Every structure is written in C-alpha cells, then in structure tokens.
Image (cartoon, rainbow, N blue to C red; front, side, top):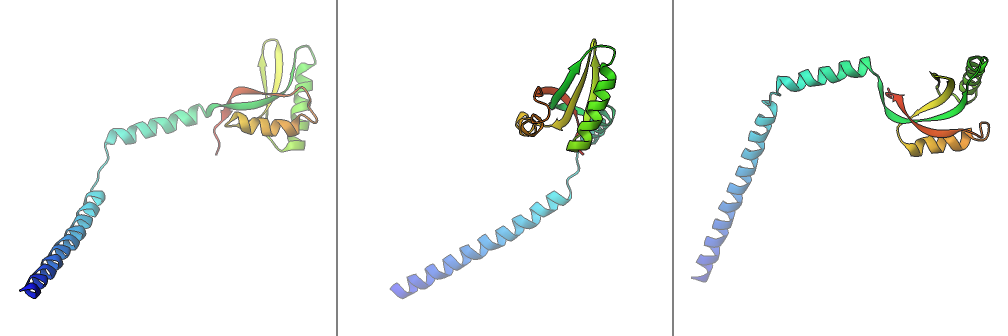
Length: 142
C-alpha cells in the first residue's frame, strides 16, 4: 500500500510541475503580446517635441563656470578678448565673454557639477590665481 501512495504522489507532483511550467510559458507569451501591442499616448510625443524645441531655442542648463577675468574701463573689452583667446589656446576649454554693466567678464568651461569646476580650477589657478568657480547657465552638452 505504501508503494501505491508514493507512486500516486510522484504522479501528482509531476502533474503540478507540468501545469506550472505550462502556465509560465503561457504567461511569457501573453506578456510579449502586451509589450508588442503597447501604443503610447499621443500627448507624450507632443510634450517630447515641445521639450526638444525648447532646448533648441534656449540651449542652456544650470551649471558652473570658472571666472578668470572681471574688469571695467575703456580697454576692458580688448583685454577680455585677449585673455579669452589666450586661454582657449592654452587649455582647449571654451571661454565666454559677458558684459553686465560696467564689467566685462571672461568665464570658462561648461561644468555640470561644482566638483567638476573645482577640479578644473586647480589647474587654471596656476596661471589665473584670482579665478573662482561660479554658478552660471551653461551650454547643453552634446
């Protein structure tokens, strides 16, 4: 009698395992069908398009730059241009001239984090000892 019970249990366990594996295969097929048939909301595409247009029109994000020059006066623009050109040639980092009355400023780099700006500042301070990092709108990285 004991052998018959063991044989019955083995058959029962085999049937349970068979149905579990069949159910798993069926579930995978139905998930793939759902994934393949998914259609997104048209409003999402519209929002993504608007964001792309916004980025093209205003290609800046908050970030950091390093200010290496700030001066006012009659010769300030000429000096700012010379400093910008010399800096770009030596460091191969983009430099920008801004004017906020009465000062011309030369700010360099497009750093996403303050830590990145500080790392670059350590190298730049050797030639520009009065340089410091500053929050600024930076160009969106390509």
